[in-house]
Image 1 (spheres, rainbow, N blue to C red):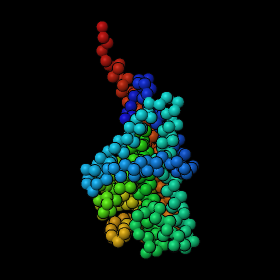
Image 2: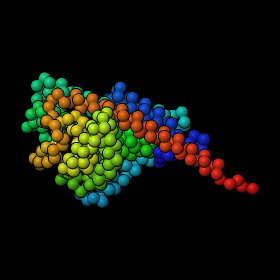
Image 3: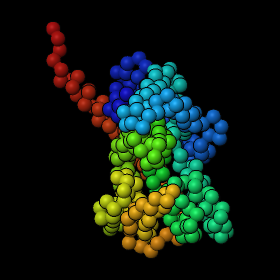
Length: 341
């Protein structure tokens, strides 16, 4: 893997990827996602999903061990592909990182779905909104009123913003192309088999647990960036206080902190009881403000854009700073090394 403290340009081996290549590619890929959203045709993630479905016909069994094999083959293959792409000629590296970043990010598409929900609710089209929200959430929307549909949308913007923007940027900054492709494989497999349906309760165990692990640090990064968007010490402290108090009531170790931070930053209350195919799940009460209303969707979307941009700047800056520290340390070590006779 191309780690965050990889070799500097002067000491790179043949085929190694420089930190500048990755940093520039992340910025360009983020800009492409912001401008265009997901590719309309030949989406690589959709292609990966078709490969996963084909493999499942051979690997499926209602056992955890079978799910572990399924996960290992697909995630391992994605990481190996990313590592192979780092050996491309130098002129191709930035475009490849940018294309991969564009493919694995989902910020613009998430915003489009939220904007479409906002328009439907503003037009009092509940039937259309109940149909559209299925693109964002897995809960049963048939009995939801306008404000509950708005809550579902805002919670999806929070959770999926972390999964589709902050997490891939984090793993791209940490591990370059292998990190980008490996993370998207993990997250896609969780969406495909990680839910607790009768078919996947055992087979999907590995997918769900690995997704939790891959998103643990990025979710905390999202909380920190959300707190910083308040732009005051008092606001940041309040955000952290709400997260510490309310996030444990949420069943997800990553969505809970992210949604609690969103609730605090928006001054609204998220969480509650959701219905998943007849199974009711309590998500806790997150935040101190009034319940979400339809007017809050646009505010949540704008907040997510700020979080995405701040995360990009922070993660790329951290990567470049660590490069500078690593190179300085290497030069100091070389100067201190005794000369051979």
